[in-house]
Image (cartoon, rainbow, N blue to C red; front, top):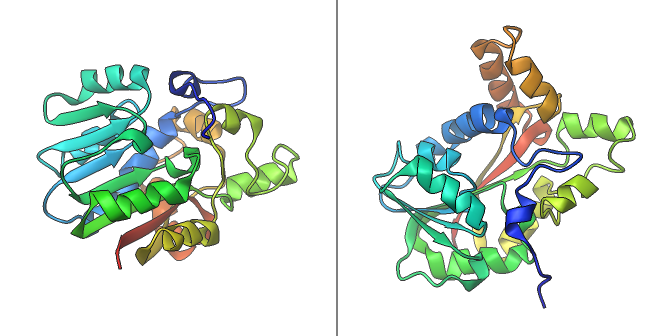
Amino acid sequence: MSKKRDYDKEIKDNFGRNYAYDFDIDVIHKFMMKSFESFFVEGSCLELGCYKGDFTKRLLEKFEKVTCIEASSDAVKEAYSKVGERVHIINSRFEEVELEQKFDNIILTHVLEHIDNPVNLLKKVNDDWLSEKGKLFLVCPNANAPSRQIAVQMGLVPYNSAVTEAERLHGHNITYTFDTLEKDAREAGLEIKYRNGIFFKALSNFQWDELLKTDIISPEYLEGCYELGQKYPDLCSSIFLLCQKK
């Protein structure tokens, strides 16, 4: 039986960690889209876990309509205030949703690590929601990001793939590496077509937030971190798998 969860409480900042940082919304979201856009399939789009709609707004630049599923009622209210009539948000747990259509693009970014049974969700995506030509864009935080490895050396995190107490309070159940994420995708019956990293990252999110308030970090520097991440995907902030039906 699944544990009882309060999704509205999980999205609140806690004593050790914000749920979302400006760095996530302004930098990582931008480079996620840059990583995704050449792989988008013409057609429909389903976003699993829209939070407060910030990435949804970016998807609306590429798709006429977007369907979202989001478990937090508080997040849904704020998302609707941002995204407008072109987005249909279903306020529900993924496990309880039955959709009448299949989708050509399914976006699952920084969500799978929150799921009680991630393989079951990926199987549902593969069997029920992904069209025959569809692509799944799967992104998770990377346990081997340099910023996290530095935190381990500092004694702030016990080991790279640990789930810290602050992360647990935000609903995290796992911290993925490429091998564990690929294992779950394959176990769900998905075919992995492409793998890469998004943004080389040696500083923590709160450090990035402080730097982004200054003129120390230029747009060119951010682009350089993205391009370096293409060479060293294992050292990126997030890991990205592009999947489809076998």
